[in-house]
Length: 275
Length: 238
Image 1 (cartoon, rainbow over the protein chains, first blue to last red):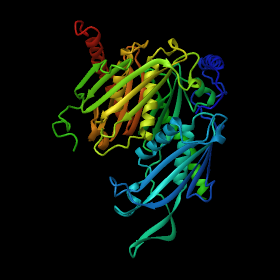
Image 2: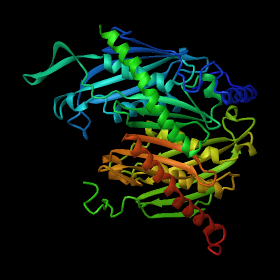
Image 3: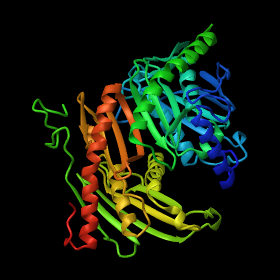
Image 4: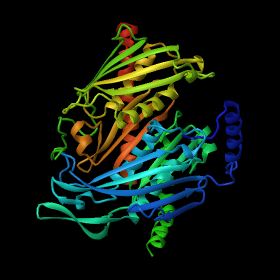
C-alpha cells in the first residue's frame, strides 16, 4: 500500500539519509519528528451521502461517505444498530494500486479504523434501534482512498470520524405494522470521538504521520487511537520489523499529546461544515 | 461476573496465571517443520514448508526469501460452524502473524525461495493468534530455518475492571480490553502488538508490562518442546 516506486538500492540510500537527518531531529521533507503534514478536512463534500468528509494529509487524500439502511439486527445483538466501516484503495490512488477485491493491506486498514470507532463507543448503537430484534439502523461508512502518500491509517480514520460527526440520517418510525420514513432527519447518537495517531519506527526512532518515502523504509508502523478522555482504545503494529519494548510506551505518550492537536482540527472543521 | 470476590476467574485461574500449555515438535511427517500446541482449549497445528521454489515465479525476491503465512480456522473449531472461506479477520491475522515472525528469521540466507507457514486452528478458545505465533516459531526452528531468536506471544487484557493475563474465550468476548503481544525474548524486541478496548495510560502500562514479563514463561515451554525432540529429554532447559 505504500505505493511509492520501490528499489532496494534507493531504499537503502534513502534510509541512510533519513537516519542522518533524524540524528539532528529533522526529516526528509523538512518536518520535525513529531510534526504532522498539513491536515485539511472538508465536511459534506458528497451531497448525496448522509454524511461525508474529504481528508487531505500532505499528498494523501481520502474521502468517506455515510449511507444508511433499515435492516434486521445481527442475531447476537438484537438491541443494537449496525455499523460497518470499509476502506478501499482505488486504482486512481497510485500507479501500483490495482482494481479488484481489497487485499490484505486494505483489509487491515478497514479493520483497524473500525476497531477505533467501535472500541471508543463513538456511535451509541443501542440508540439506533427501531423495533428491538426486528428493525435497526444500519450505518455504512465507506472510504475511498484517492491518492496515497503514506499514513492511510490516520487519513482514513479522520475521514470516517468526520463523516460520522457530520451525518444527518433519515428518521424512521414503526407504525401500523411497518417501518415508515418520517421525512425528518436526525444526527447520529455520538458519545465519543476517537483520534488515531500513527507513527513509523526507523531504527527505534519514532516519527508521526510518516509519508510514502518514510513508510517505504520504516521497520514498523504503530497506530494508537485515543478517546476524548485521553484513554487508549485501539492499537496495531504493522510492518516486517520490530521495536524495543520501551518504544511502545513512548508512542503512547506521543499519541495522547498529538491527539489533542488533531481533535481540534477535526472539531473545527465539523463546526464550520455545520454552519 | 467473570472474576469472583476471591479474585478467581471463570476457569479457576488467578489474574496472572496462564492456561495449561502443551507443545509437541515434529508431529507431521510431510512438513519440513511442524508443531502442535494445546493452549487452554486451543488446539492448533502448524506446518512449515520450505525454503522451496516460488510459484508464481514473479513473486520471488532477489535478495531474500518470501515468507507467506496462512492463519485458518477449521469449520468445527467454534461453537457455531465457521464458513471455511477465509474471513477478513483471518486475512488480517495472517498478515500480522507473518509480520510477527519475519523479524526473527534470517531471510537473506535464502534468496529466490519461499517459506510457507500454515497455522490451522482445530479448536479455538481465545488467544489463538498468540498460541499460533508461539507454535509457528517453534515449527520454523524445527524446519531448520536460520533464526535470530524465537518469538513468544501472549495476550493481556482487562476483565471486570482488572488487568488479567491470557484471556480465555469468554473473557475475550465480554472483557473490556484485549492486547496480544509477541516478543523476541533474547533480543528484547516487540514483533506483534494489537489492542482493542478501553484502557487508561496507567492500565495500559500495567497490562503491557504483565505481557512482557509473562512471555518469558512461554519461551521456556517453547525451548522445552524443542529440547524434548532434539535431545530426547536428556538435556534440560535451565
